[in-house]
Amino acid sequence: MENKIDIQNIKGEFDIFKNHPTLCYMDSGATSLKPRCVLDKMNEYYNMYGVNIHRGVYELSFKASNEFDIARSKVAKFINAKENEVVFTKNVSEALNEICLMLVDDLKEDDIVLTTELEHHSSVLPWIHASKKKNFKVDYIELDENNRITFDNFKKALKENTKVLAITLVSNVLGYVTDIKPIIEECKKRGIITIVDGAQAVQHFKIDVKEIDMDFFAFSGHKMFGPTGVGVMYGKEKYLKQLDPVYYGGDMMDTASKEEILLKDTPHRYEVGTPAIAEVIGLGEAIDFIERIGFINIQKKENELRDYLFNEIKKVDGLTIYNLGTDSPILCFNINYCHPHDAITMYDEDEICLRAGHHCAELLSKHLKVNGTLRASLSIYNTKDDIDRFVKKTKYIVDFFKDFF
Ligand SMILES: Cc1ncc(COP(=O)(O)O)c(C=O)c1O
Image 1 (tube, protein in one colour):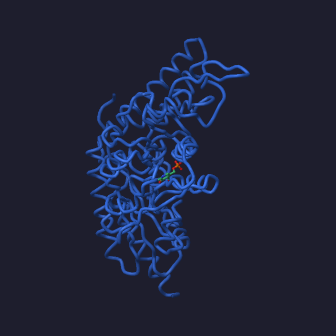
Image 2 (image 1 turned 90 degrees about the horizontal axis):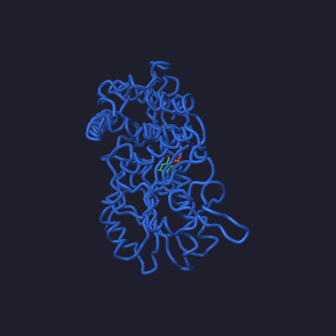
């Protein structure tokens, strides 16, 4: 691996800032920016050995296959999984949908899938949809007064026939980190299958799937400095060796006849057709990038940015803040005098990129009784100067709309 990266000068690793020197990007919850090394690695694939994998019996194909397999082993190490427990998907949404579709046949009428109103749509909508067809129930852990998931409320929601838990590790709207270990332990005692959405976790802190011991875990490459088009479905070997894949076609079977299909072992049985080769290789490079910075440094910087952001924004009148005391560098708020979509266009005038709306978590908007919120989500390339610009603009927008109110 190359030398360590100095987090204080991290902006220099992202060429987008050369093209947009005044960009104030506060939408990393939607997708992170991509460092040069990831793009270079993907270009290297296309320019140097850009052929298909696991098919060709020639040198270039061996090279491409080897790089693809190396990326899988980097992902496995990154989350402490076995290589055959790492399945590449398009993104976390596809992974969570596949998990639902693979498990749903074993659910009977009156079984319960337990989840929360904090979930991103991709963690909960597949279950709501399937429950209508199969007549099982989807239940929700009551959120506490700060809209957090608590162990006590989780225990209260458990029933004899709870069979699956689908839960977020970090809320994409409020940034709360779920205290997942005791929840998983309790599920294990009761034979409940656990699925954890890690989309907003893997870029911030170390995940050890064996230590947490969840059955399934999913995340996307593009939120962790990797490319779009690649995600990961982790599943314990004991499940992945026996479940029926959702998709069938090339490269996932050993033999096929009119009567029978003999599937390959995991993970290949779940990866049908030509995968996103450059993107998988790029994801491997994104993991190297994170490791060259180190999670200790990432967390230190993100916590400093979060604390500064909240200290400064709390000084502005005319706002409602929904996640004081959050665990992540995410601010969820509203300007009391205008709709979030009106505000967002004014931020954009100054090249300040935020997100407005439900953030694909409409159950939470309904729970909060709002039409939407504004979200500023930070990452390692943000600076205190970005926050100062954001706070100054927020004051300006408050004053602007207050006059019409
Ligand atoms: C918590 C969470 N889960 C799932 C997703 C879906 O991610 P993707 O669009 O990469 O499938 C997101 C995206 O914002 C998210 O924040």
